[in-house]
Length: 165
Image 1 (tube, rainbow, N blue to C red):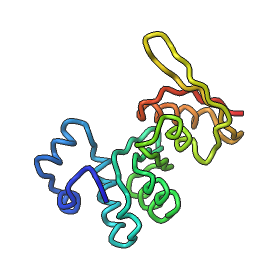
Image 2: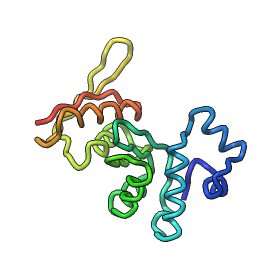
Image 3: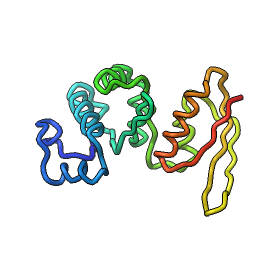
Image 4: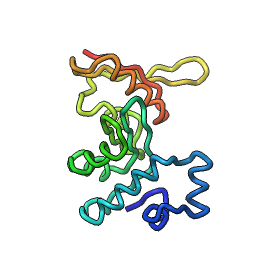
């Protein structure tokens, strides 16, 4: 398993200079440290977690966005007991897992999962800014949740406007 911190630092709770620097510079946060601890503890019980590469996490209005590799997306979606532990220990309402290595369109598909994107267009704005406009199939997707998803997309480095059909 790959995590941003040393295994020893995560297990002991005492950070070395390198790990302390990651938090002090803002590259990672205490939330990343907490998630790394949870994943390491669960990895001793669930061997599949050895395939995960955890990169970073963001929280927006009770929604936790986890950046991982493709195996991490699959495992964290399929293994409900891991998701439940993360929700319990971090105090969030929902978890979204996105593969950080994929292109912007794939990131958006994973961000809105389990809803389906039915239309996607790329808009170029003045100032060399690109923005995606996506149509998502799902009547139960309310405006508040759409705004959370748009804020999380910004943290992924993607400007997006989401509309429901």
